[in-house]
Length: 209
Image (cartoon, rainbow, N blue to C red):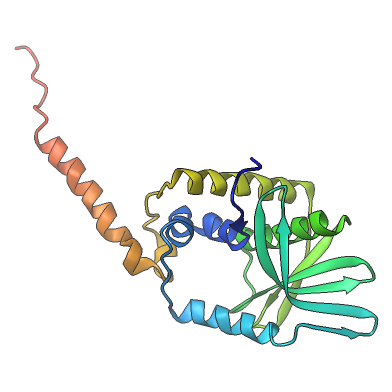
C-alpha cells in the first residue's frame, strides 16, 4: 500500500455520490460546470479569502493543506478552528441544509488527516451550509472512521484498475454537471437494446405434443 499515489479527499465524496462520477473526474480527468458546481466554488472562494487569524482565543486556518500518509489522502480543509491544540474542521457546502452521508465521510476524512499530521485526537467537526447559513456539528464515531477507511480503499482500487463503473441513470443524474459527458441514458438504452437483440434471436422452447 506504501506505493499508492495519494488521492484527493474530495474523491471519497464523489465516489459515495456516484462511483462513475468519481472515475470520470479522477481517472478520465473530466470536469464540466453547472449552476451547482459554480455555487459550490463560490462558497469555497468566500471562505478561502483569509488564510489565518485569531479571535477570542480560537485560531482560524483557511484553505489548510492536509494529508494522511496512512490512507494516502491529500486535500485542503475549507476551515480548521484550533481550540488550543485541538483542530476542529469545518466543511463548507453550497445550498441549504441537507444530510448526505458522503459529506460526513469527507469531513471525517479531514479529521483523520489532521490526526495523522498532528498526533492529536479530533472528536468533532462541523458542516456549514452557505445557502441557509446553518451549521451542524458532526461526531466522528468509530463507525464513521471505518467508513472513511473502507471508501478510501475502494477508491484506490478503482483508480489503480482504471475501472469506469456503469452509470447510475437515476435521479442523481439530473443535477450532475457531468451528465453530458457520462451519457447515462444513452448507455442504459444501449444495454436495453443489446438485451432485446439477444432475446429476439432466442428460439422459443418447444414442448413435445
